[in-house]
Amino acid sequence: MNFRRTLLTACATAAATMAFLPHAALAQSPMVLKAADVHPAGYPNVVAVENMGKKLDAATKGRLKIQMFPGGVLGGEKEMIEQTQVGAINILRTSLGPIGTVVPEVNVFNMPFVFRNQDHMRAVIDGAIGDELLAKITASPAKLVAIGWMDGGSRSLYTKKPVRTPADLKGQKIRMMGNPLFVDTMNAMGGNGISMGYGEVFTALQTGVVDGAENNAPSFFTSNHFSTGAKYYTQTNHLIIPELLVVSKVTWDKLSKDDQALMKKLGREAQMEQRALWDKSVDENTAKLKAAGVEFINVDNKAFYDATVAVRAKYGANYTDLMKRIEAVK
Image (cartoon, rainbow, N blue to C red; front, side, top):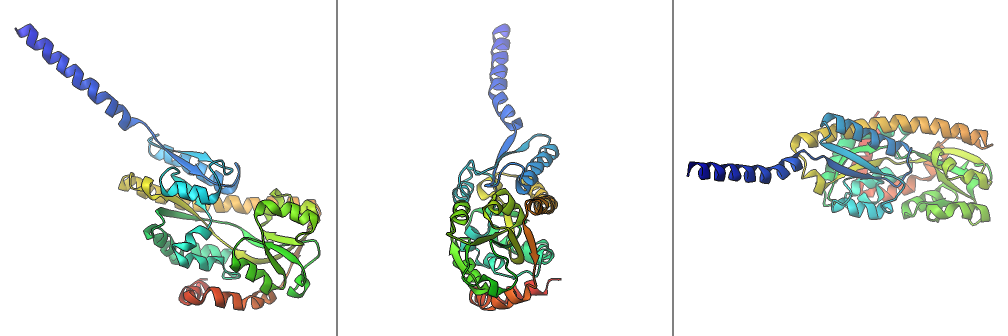
């Protein structure tokens, strides 16, 4: 009888142990966070998030990891935002455009010359205004937790004819991003703003459908648009638009408070690291453009700033206080 009781006890103990083991194993298995970006491997945003993953892996001793999917392999930005909202993508670098529909204040950053220069933009997003907007995005119905900003570059004109004043843009068709605000900006600056998808610009420049476009130096070089005859890069810096690093709310709610705090800390570090990588990329691609024969034209931006006063008044009418706060940042 004692033997039988001992055997039953041993079997019960073994069964309990076996039942527990899968849960123990599960508790120790790493949580792999899927990160995505439309930009290619090696792009500053992508590298910064990959390095964030290395830090997260080290800080959690392998419990939390990041797997990066660059180059738009998980879809376009719209599709990736939707995937992030339902938790299919865990971490995403996104532009501000889609966020503006739920947090209108971020649209202020899309306006021409709202920032005096790149340093001014960085001072704004690094300070109280940047933190407030991150919090507004997180609290909004977007189902995204905003943990950091990223540089999207300072956009200037590239054309086939030199542009030094707004008058030089007269009659020139300039490709702009698909937003009435941006088209109105170019029209106010003296050109004819043409809304067009980014993938169409190369052929449009080649065939003369447009006479120029506008973007940052790295994009101007990597798109190879300079090879179409657009050999003049006029540094108007009319748009300086930051971007966002967000975490899916679905994913966020599964993290402990400590892990959430760690993600915010690493998000801020990624913001600063991406900035350093971006500056290096601008320097390198500027040198490549000059070596390819592109002429960089420095201009007095005041004429272009003055020309776009009505655009800021029209699109910033609901955000006058915020714009005053932005202007006051040193």
